[in-house]
Image 1: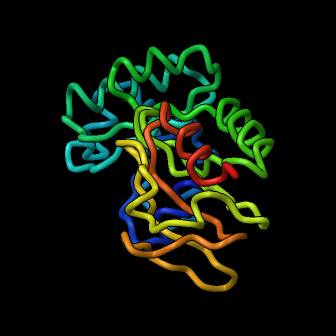
Image 2: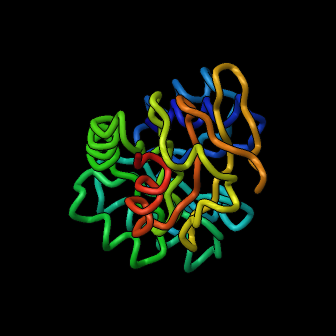
Length: 209
């Protein structure tokens, strides 16, 4: 995971330094990717210091050990004032601990579960992305092909709840940035930003007959 991430970030023009315990992996990385590779333990102050973590915008810990990832991220935050730390979390039960300590926790188990759950909502309202701290979501709502009450009035007259904003209308091959006077049409797909507690209200307003 670490080598793939490093290669991807370098390809996008970022400066990357890798700290890796295994000497053989260090040799392979140094020959495969144009990055500085340090053979050492990222939980050890001296190796983060050697990597000049104090100059980093982001520190990522992606080992298979949650304890190591937590310690390494905390060291980067507390000792080197890195503004953002990101950690791989292997056990989803640990996510809350990481988040409470100000570390962005990424659990593949949780992400896969969310994707499965979100895809099962096709036909009503699809959650495309949950924004930071899970308070807002970007959603897609399909207007029924037979039409709905929302097609009979301008967007500004829909009575959208506070916390809901329509950001785009997909109509066939066309993408429309909506204005208050625009009207929805049967078969439109609507992209909206909404607070989580208003999702059902938004769906009801847009799709009810």
